[in-house]
Length: 166
Image (cartoon, rainbow, N blue to C red; front, side, top):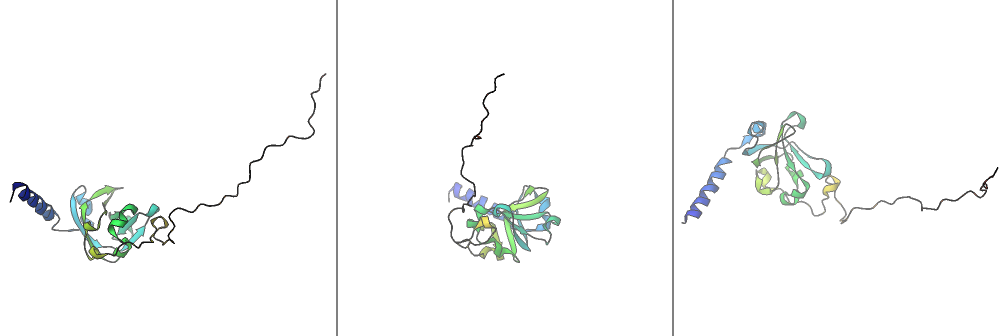
């Protein structure tokens, strides 16, 4: 084996060892800016503004300082994130801080293991902009009709006073 191959294998093994033990989601706040494996049961998957999905590990997400965030453009790489509700997941990545809460941004299915590793792909007619509702296959946003009237030229009064000279 070459030195490069041995070095590459060593780096791969070390990175796998760093994720060997998962921490529970209630410990994530203590591991900000560290690559970690975080595990827990997803209680609910919420869809926020602009199609962002949040995996909540507690009934009241405001009371728990950890969540997993899935941006709409990443759903094609992950699958149907709504299927994670009720499952115990293991997610691996850097724990980041946002609004005094710990979070991991889920960008790829490769970050998941446990029950979450076999979620189905995103349905072809899934519309992220409609908060998870299904569309009929429109490729662009519908344009609403406006009821603006035509522009008209202002009319002058018919009886215009003439200039009065004194």
